[in-house]
Length: 391
Image 1 (cartoon, one colour):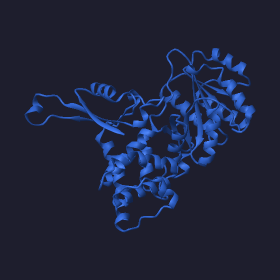
Image 2: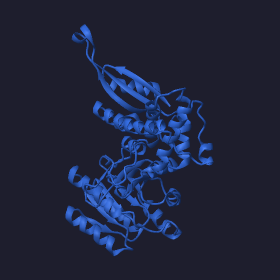
Image 3: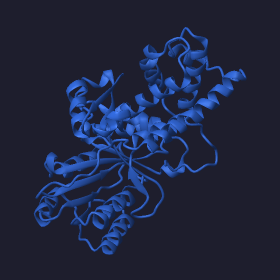
Image 4: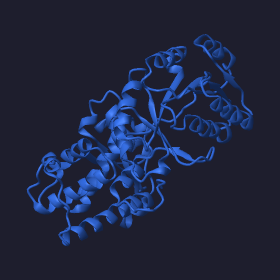
């Protein structure tokens, strides 16, 4: 990983320097204003300093992280909050190390971590390893992350430096979230796909309500889930409350007619049937419906429950990857302490992350996935019985 600082007269100029030096794959880690000292403060304007980073492995990615899309950490208080969370883990690790309470991993796990010559550093690395594993990050990705920062670890490297490197690496790997963005003078169709029981209809209603109420956009619903009467009734209830039209569609031909009917709308949210990912005929039906909309006029979101076992998530994402490209929404984050599957699935599929839901309140209980928050949660001690909402 490459980390550099850039100074310029304005934020825009500093970002241009980042693009020129590190390229559009770079991610902004911090932005701060530097005021001149001494006599110069009376005659010289403050400069903007940007700290930017790039993962060496990101340079050749087909889906680069665009600097223009980065959600900047602009305030020192936000940086301080991150450091506080990391320091809390540092205190825990140092206490365990000093008391010789380091738990030994089994032989297979130790073989996966490249040995660090300094024993103190190895203890720190092993405890960070245990912390990520306890948050349900897959062993393969834990080893990958620690292997990539190994070259930055020297004899007696401070623990806060190791933690900062792991934190930055996780943020880079999570990438920037994909959000729903309306088109100019053209309707965008937003499909919600996924297995049964993950909360697709409720998630659709939360996000659609946000755009209807907070953004004042012209919204419509399409329901393809004609297999479940309850789902149709639920979506119709939301449509009535929001005062928006809803259309129930049974065939791809009707979907094509709906494009003309809703041509003056900003966003059309499409609820699909929660069918088994093992049913080939049902998958073919979904492909037919998706193909009625040109790719540039549609977004597809695969809705997954964060509580689903990782092995099942692997099979589900593989099946849907054969159908279409998608971004990922995770639901039910209030029902688990572990968020490791967010990182696991991001690295497995390379699909962009998008939204995270918690609770049943419409439209409040959802947010855009924040890589900084996820990284902090993965690196801090699990406090049993505490709130699981990522804050």
